[in-house]
Length: 549
Ligand code: ADP
Image (cartoon, rainbow, N blue to C red; front, top):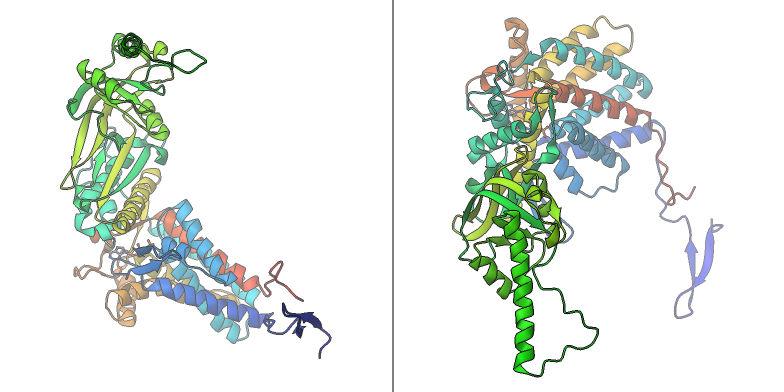
């Protein structure tokens, strides 16, 4: 059939025939389409399955320009993979929504959705209508979520009125943060990072409103040195040195002039070229410059400042005068850093020397130079600020890759701690909550009328995939492990039993303090079910612009 053919000429004038719909991909529709969607979702889920849990494997991601990234964070893996398939993209969105709302459980949600779709495929093969399956899964999800509420436990975020904003090793927040770091690159420095996470969150948390303002926490990655040199700075970090090596390295009771005007004399007011012909003229110009500097320094001194932070640079002459007048200074401080300093020290940013006055100075208990371990790189920290709520986590590592991955790890544990401050209800991890829900949904299956029975059992089987994947990734036999746990959960009436991934001879996740926030686990179930339902309803994909029908 050549009805679609057109004649064309190539650049040499030779005729050729283009048949337009040749190579057009046959798009499936109806149940066939749903099946093929499920298969592509399964391939994405299977990539993430091996990364789940504390023994999950890392993936190497190579960006188009050759940059290498190693991670086992589900959202990161998916966001960096290029999918041409629309359904695969939906799974990427899924892990992103889990990440945005909870910041944790991003791998689990995709694995669960994949398992649910797998189960749905079997029911489709049995001849059950996709919409019916979706509705049944939705009902099953309600049962599972109700069960989560039932088995939820509470952790103590703080005792009574006395809030200790330091991380005590016996505190539950600390333990929770520590567990979340177990599978990450920073696991060797788990204690240090957990402490950092708890102290960051508690420093900025408004405990009466149970609110945590993440904006006040800055994570500053700095390549060089080792992870062990990472630290929490209660204040602001300035990636600069003092302008002169002889200035004091520690400034106590700092009164800071924050300037956006340059430390240089205004240009002489002449429209024409400045002619210097004689020694006297040159000396006059020099004197003019010196007077101008002296006046600026006078303004700073009269305001009572003992530290100058300047957005601009200044030349050797100015630098020397500052040194002589015992005014330590920092130059070339970027706009955002300047603003951070102003907020933290409650100072005003001053655009003109004339405007300087005592009430515009920022206040900090101590400003000191921080020398970084072996690299001799220097930074400045502003601590004991007037506004104590700003904190900075300084992360160091030998390469950008390590710094990036530890930034993600810290971010994850910050989320865990924040979630607990917001809502201290938890369920137990290691698949314990999933097993308990699976048992609850299975039990409810028998009382369902009609086809929902199948969907309920499918939902329960999908939940089992989480502990199974955890067991498999830890080198345990998945079927034996999960069936043993199920039997024990029913006979011992203990919903805290989960997969002992780290070989600690303890299956009680409460003992191991492996917890997941209740809201996070609920969100996982709801999002995975929602996505499955959605895919079961799609029987055609129409791509705008590419469609030739
Ligand atoms: P996600 O991105 O979904 O958070 P993770 O790779 O962090 O994925 O794995 C989380 C899963 O691993 C959760 O089901 C959690 O309960 C489980 N888990 C974490 N630490 C342990 C542990 N020490 N023992 C058993 N299970 C654990």
